[in-house]
Image 1 (cartoon, rainbow, N blue to C red):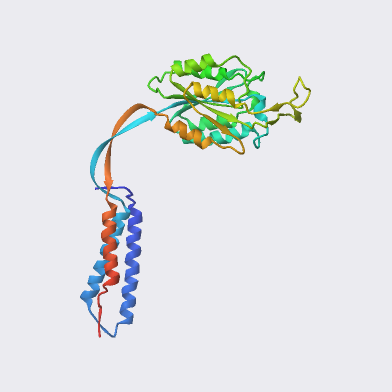
Image 2: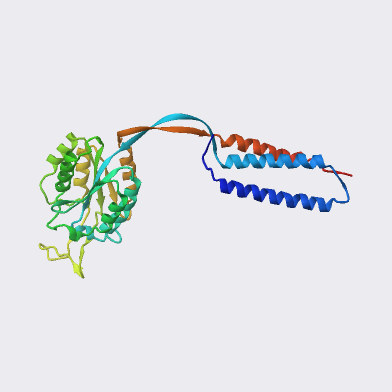
Length: 321
């Protein structure tokens, strides 16, 4: 027999407490009835009945498992690159406290959700860089997320094709070729000042790599803080306004059989993004056999409850008047 919760110390303490309390009960019974004739064998029957269902409760609490069988456990995995736009427009405050800070908060929860998968971080604006290679290490990922800021990359505009090209190259040279389930989460406000991304999305689609794009911001947009002032549009000489441009992000997602999601104070589709990634079928990277057993605590608990009910509805007479 296998015990799911073999806490011997707890079981002993519960038994001791039961014994002491029952001794107190018997002593009080004796004091009250010392001048009356007591049926000792009936007291013994009641003691055995209560001790029996108490023991059954203790056995049920320990979670007994009877019988074993071998069960195959398959290990599945996904490789996911998170590409985060760190251009100056991500400091816009149309989402509180700003776009980048909100993304950092949401990504911490997303990374925890996929602790069993390898996740890497790519940062980009006009160029893309590997901030963290694919890893299972949650602590490393959280550390890199905490350190994200728009000063980590050059800021001469945003090129959406740069992180996609970098992710494709890393997937192609990755040593762990067993993992065939590969995805990219592209996070940006959608502004694109680079060349056409159609060529790279075609290559991603041919390689079976899905892109889930996340648009951050609002169509109304907002100004972009920089230091104690604002970023000025060189053409109008007025504060620049950054707005969410979802068309590019939607197009990238569609061309790679992915989906588009948005994040703002009004629209919060991060949970939908997580569900979409979970629906991507992982690749079986290995399997192992484990010994499984069925917990039979319920039967002991049921018999104990029946004896307890019997004790309540059919009391034994212990005093002869």
